[in-house]
Length: 126
Image 1 (cartoon, one colour):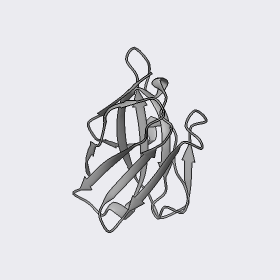
Image 2 (cartoon, one colour):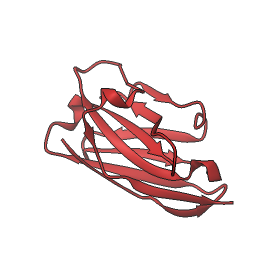
Image 3 (cartoon, helix red, strand yellow):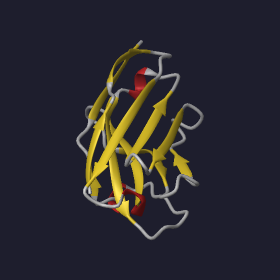
Image 4 (cartoon, helix red, strand yellow):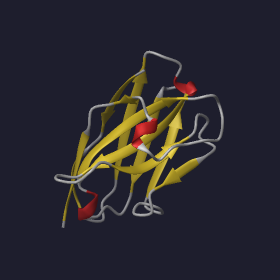
């Protein structure tokens, strides 16, 4: 599966942004999808993940209550809605996919994912 993330930009603290990740090349509903981010000089970290149907999601503590991950299998896309953005959310955001049997499982470790999109940069000014 090939992934392409988009939707990043420069926003002010408190603003909202929605990232999108378009998938192609395979049956999208066979994949668990994850969002990760990497700030300058820091390691990549888990942000959110969603199982194949959207019935199960998981979030990093730092974004819980502010970010929402969703997917549209008919459109082969996964989204990350980011509300109440903070300067510490500034990073390159990556979507990732892992083929899986259709279960409620999602994954927070980047090593679990085999396909990655290019990053989309989110910059939050104070």
